[in-house]
Length: 91
Ligand SMILES: [Zn+2]
Image 1 (cartoon, rainbow, N blue to C red):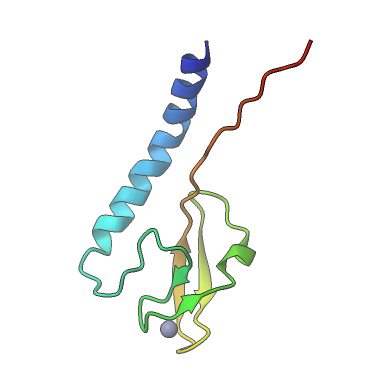
Image 2: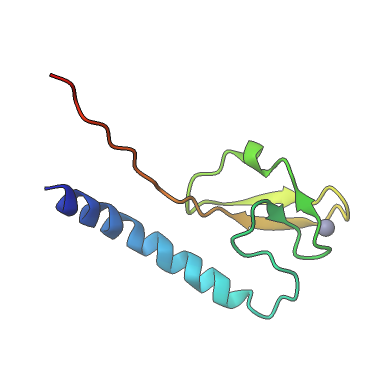
């Protein structure tokens, strides 16, 4: 049964994953590495927004961020990895 639960999870995320891949293709010409970075990275100057964990993004949601260095506005698209922790139920 566990595998079917995981399959459903994958199907739920499939559409979002596709959107993320399309977004990545769109930005492939960008010289600054802004894809799947630890922090939100400005595509104009490469400045890393170290407060990106404070943005409270939902996976698949795109928001506008003002760069802390060049002050240009760019779009951040959040990719959240889902992991599981399983523990035996006592009793
Ligand atoms: Zn910038």
